[in-house]
Image 1 (cartoon, helix red, strand yellow):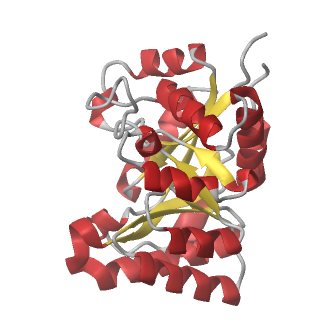
Image 2 (image 1 turned 60 degrees about the horizontal axis):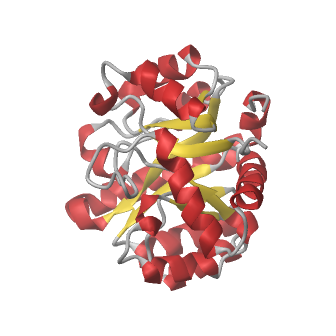
Amino acid sequence: MSLPSITDSHCHLDFADFDGNLEETVKKAERSGVGRMVTICTQLKDEPKVRNIAEKFDCVLYAAGTHPMNVHKQPVINVSDLLEIARHPKFVGIGETGLDYYYTKETEQDQKKSLLLHIEAAQTSSLPLIIHSRSADTDIAEILESEFKNAEFSCVMHCFSSGRELAIKMLNLGFFLSMSGIVTFPKSQELRDIFSLAPMDQILVETDSPYLAPPPYRGKRNEPAYVTLTAQKGAEIFNTSYENFVNQLEKNFERLFPKAATFRLAE
């Protein structure tokens, strides 16, 4: 029996790490059972390049926004412009956006302004918000909870590696937590324990490639094909079979990213 198709819900196929072998990277992912990939634009000036990748490959979808570490490099986003981009049939999410106080604490206020604009775009478009949060648990929780009360929106905490308190707050809003290769690292038991407390129907998996490759590729370039390794660890965390876990992940993905359901590949 063939293994079920899986989705890499967050990767960066436009990054220079994939220059020269992008086509083979996508083919390798497909051979590994990856039926869909969402490639994420982190600077709106790069949106045409990311869109072209999505248009070139049937299995690739995309999202766009201004990464919090890039707010100082970019003009403030225009919500109307982002909503216009979002009309593309393969555009499935808003972001990634969020707060990063570990690397770019000095741009905190600009990050918050950018995040609020992305939230407005998500609320208006009904597309899910894709959140990056690092060393900013208190502020990200306060902003997301407050804005959710004003007008509900859907959201995924991408590459979740924060604490238990933030996880519970986000899950209580109905948001999703996304597993990256970090959960496979030997020293990540605390993170695995946090994921084990979450409902399995609020979980996604991703590579965040080219970063965070799981063993046995740790320290090397990550790629969408390796999302299956993270999913194997996820199945262990939830004490279920790989097939059952991936089938649930696919249902979760299509519930959070309804536009993506149109592009589900036949198994």
